Image 1 (cartoon, helix red, strand yellow):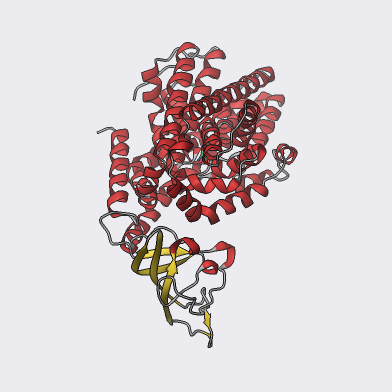
Image 2 (cartoon, rainbow, N blue to C red; image 1 turned 90 degrees about the horizontal axis):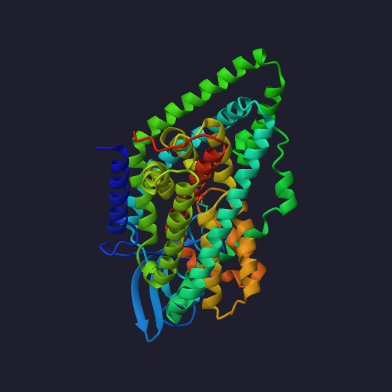
Length: 515
Ligand code: ASP
């Protein structure tokens, strides 16, 4: 059986396992809810007066897990009877003073007023928790290769270019292609969302519930976004003060900058002296590729664990509330993939659509399961060189840059999300607002790092620019992780299409090389 078939099976098995045995499984008893302690008012009876137990907030908006003992419904109101144990982390007091550690306190809470999360199963959470080290170990194994691989391959690529003008041309083409495809992506997203109007498909009840459940996480995202550096700071930030530090922290743009400068310097030296340096880094690069190939053998298990975790934690209930929205995002991503990438790869790259998709599959599967273009980078580079016949010079330049700044899927997603949130809040957006969304989402996607969930943080910047309340992010947070998987797969496909286009226009002849 081919390794990619095994990865697909791992993925499907992970999804089923997550759904059936995860914390939100319909088969397991839900006996746990999470809450923000500061909002909890325990009462002795449903709807009664608070019994005086005071719960101080936990650092960093931390939530507590409560045992769910019973549920009482009265008209539109839902009450849960919960209990919690006084611990070192959670110091409680009542009217008689501080409670002893280990004391169990119980009472009723109003689900709405307390902002309780949806009930989950403790057994499910434990089972999925056991899988987490497997997924994490797999991801770390690929991430471990990113820095040495990018540095070595880019250095060798630039040093062997010979002609610096070619480097400038390559850079110009790559950035132009990135911008054009990102632009196309958001325009597709904004258009479909404006026509289908997914915001009208969500019920008032779901709207209130989603806003309540995800409010604190949405506030956190807005806070994180507020801390992001200005455009000027970002540009200056590309120049490293200490390249060793850039490598230690994995700052991709700084690593690319330093490798470029180092590579250019090598081309200016006497070639006899440069040869051993290039040979050394070439060997480092090849060794890293051997590691990628080895790690890919573990992919079916890693992917199983990653997908089980995401599906288990997300559950299906959010999907029901946000179905139309999710379908709009998926439809937009499909248009970007099949209309934009397939046609340019076919027309300019002269590669048949089906072959391009077959070749790209390994990178797409890993991107999908990891939700991180950066973590997928070693696999993307291997795909470009070994399965699409792109030269190392092109792939080592286009792909690391692409995994950091070219995020078409993220941009499209932000376009749809901004329109969706505005529709739910009944805020009509004019043509100028749409143009603003296209422009800011382009910048926001460039600024988003290739790691899970970052597109959501930069989305708050897009919302602020068009005056849509950032609390609206709460509406879509529950669905974010799943959609992140799809948009990351598209991000990586976009990077691969860029490698093919640049390679073809540089006089190489990229083609599908089945393995
Ligand atoms: N997870 C995405 C990526 O790594 C970024 C995002 O959209 O959050 O490409």
